[in-house]
Image (cartoon, rainbow, N blue to C red; front, side, top):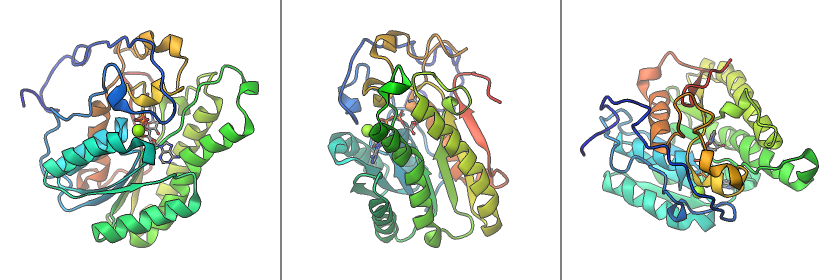
Length: 299
Ligand code: NAD
Ligand code: MG
């Protein structure tokens, strides 16, 4: 490993400004088919035992931010249950190989989290296979770009809500009987929670809801010794962007025109925030949103 996440560097040039070519895949897409392939920290994340013995359920763990979190958690000593859609098996296999190379267990539980009954099954299987559960990380998300409100059909609107906010509600509710004091829950919002793009009405609304839900829930669950926090990413290079997440014509400028840093983030740069919030180091942090967005100011 020539560099790891502890190596000092100029953040502007740590990663190149990728200026991605226009490319599209049907949802949910495979990140292995992207140009360039997002960096999950495979060659750079160095664990130091910060999550030794933890048992984590991570949704959206096959690709992008969720996959980077899964790899980081495994290298920090956690066993992982991975949630993703069956069509994403190829991406999931890559993450499983990384987890197993770190000497940890990977339990794969493909299925559709827009079903409440599947969410309950997911949690039950994760807890059974991992021998318990103490870390729940909701990363899965649906984002589809529509120029006008009239273009969002009712089914799309409902599916975005089901994936982004109903599923975390179902998963947390099902997980609670397994979560002893000291457990942590981490949800995934977005810069869109504060600065909604006009062409992502349904998505941005769910991201505001995730922040709000998490801050209320954090106050409730801290009385049971369970910490709830949020990570709010800014523009991050992932397959979400090339499966209708943004206007394809805007891809060459992805991240660079928006962030003061002048480039998009890579999933690998999001993982340390999730590690901090899951680890014992953040014992006095609850109801917080950690913004990881290349310097965009949030309220
Ligand atoms: P990604 O496409 O790699 O990950 C999203 C994952 O969601 C998919 O891999 C898929 O497994 C899962 N998913 C979607 N619908 C599902 C369903 N019905 N059932 C089960 N799983 C389902 O993209 P990403 O950018 O890494 O996204 C991760 C999270 O980060 C999302 O919540 C997204 O909203 C959030 N986020 C991303 C960005 C960004 O710029 N990439 C910015 C802000 C927030
Ligand atoms: Mg995926």
